[in-house]
Image 1 (cartoon, rainbow, N blue to C red):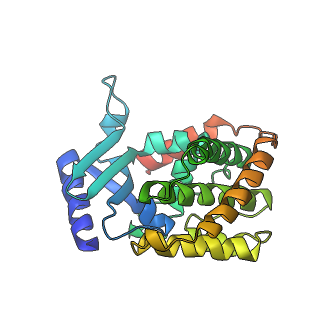
Image 2: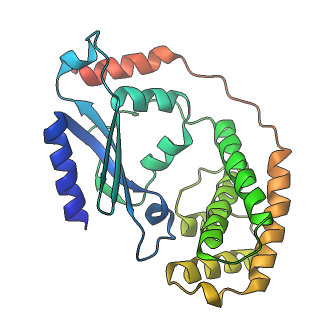
Length: 252
């Protein structure tokens, strides 16, 4: 499948006259709880081959999207990617940390730039966990859909926990479980069991007591997350990003 994805990315390059600088997998496959029917969520960052495209008054799209068969492919132009890095966009951060890379960095456009603002990351994952938690509490049924939501939420809580511990969280749920120093061993095993049942289509085998324990842990964790008000870091000087963009477009 990797060769098919790379072929599709090469087609996108030719059709749009761009160079893909980096491409990876996002979504459930990168997070570690995909199943046999999961789509491929391919994400990439590209640079237009014509320098003139960056100095024209006509507006150019900064996104390329392709839906094809089992592929959901989305790419961002370097200008958009740099601005989202400036804004500490959590989705962009996850792209850069994906354990499944299709095209490794041809040019690291984020080299030398400031780190992501942890307060923004914590706020982002708190919102995801809170929103999903409301739906889960109102739907006690154990189904493929609710189990997937449980896994999304477990991952969000784990990312928040690791940031709160002063560490840099990865994105795969197995890595996160290893990184979370304060996580109870019993909850860790419950989450691992949930991942295994979901990935292998054994929803009927899920232990209802494990769900109950995860529910309790999740409820307490989310309440703590919602009462945390991290101080935002001072936003970096946008000129640093302008200079980096100029270096990439006009390397000589």
